[in-house]
Length: 498
Image (cartoon, rainbow, N blue to C red; front, side, top):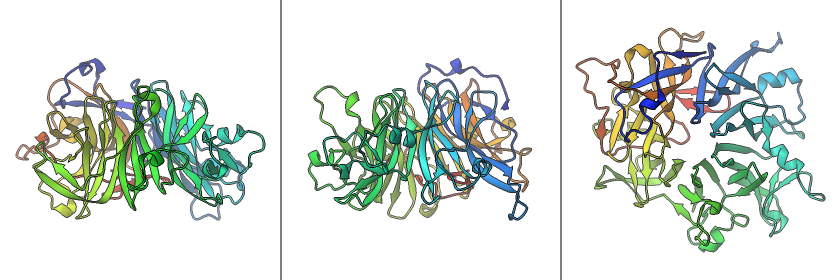
């Protein structure tokens, strides 16, 4: 069920100027389980998708425990969670009942047409090794396995062990993915284009493969790689040939409704954030271009006078319709810092200017941006450096706020991570429900929740003497794409910081 602490109206915020609200109402998505649930995507209708931990009895007295933990994709339309179950797609080595218990799925994003995308693990028919398959779900229905859909439509005479792609003008060695290769989908836009990463064959003998950023068109059932720069010394024409490009590592994390894509690509041995726009969204005759967002220095504040040295790693997490990218980058002192990249050509840090954490403790990550250039994510605070806290940042004014200081204490939650932000200001977050919802170890459980902008001012759980630096302006540190730092709550297949 959903636990609503107060009645809210979305129209309170819709159409207002892009500024950080003084107060949010909290609506928890609660299915009464004693195990963690994580929200990963939300659409404008308020449908939330993600993953939830499920514990079931394996009915085997010889096992170490009777409870087997798995992760199930969920779909929530406002009346609780609809468990979509585990994915059963290929011949398995264990019984059907075991599959229900042992295999995992998660939904990562949902568009306004009700198409949700994600991935799940399934056994290879040859050796039983788990392989991740991409899938999509329409309006909470059955999972559609994209790997199998592509395999089923192979033209006659093709190698049955491989899936083919839209690279028909070149030889077979550049257009294959192993049938047992991984394919993970991260996002979907309103034109039903999915982005993610897939194992991609390369080499003259077709004997090697790596992870490549890809786009899948649901309508036309086509999968093709995103052309990414793998060596700065290569010519632009060669770099932008998606079927011959030999980038050894890349991923697409997010696609906007205007066709911008961001993620990461390995460039000269380093991982760099990129921005790319699909040709179908550009004017006829426009030059196809990949932008390497990775600078040598990371600017802070509005002036860019202070800089951090970048230490070889940056990731793009989200991009809006204007092409503004947010994500994380690492610095020379091995800290992780949230950034925003605009067409100014500079990465700028996102962090409260009043934060006094030592450099080695600094951590932040920007996870999403809306079309008003409002950014949400996670960071470490000076109050509790061991705990992660959700933030919102407004780029036009440089305002930064701890979301826990924008909700009433009576809501009874701690907001640990802000995942998505809609154009009307609603934010999908993960919260810990305190103090009455705990697991068998007396640990607060994780729940997804929606924060909706409201009128008035919040009464947060703060001492009156405590300094409120929740609306500071300026720049500051970064965050971790890989979700490596801080306290972590883990699903079996993915970990999410709390």
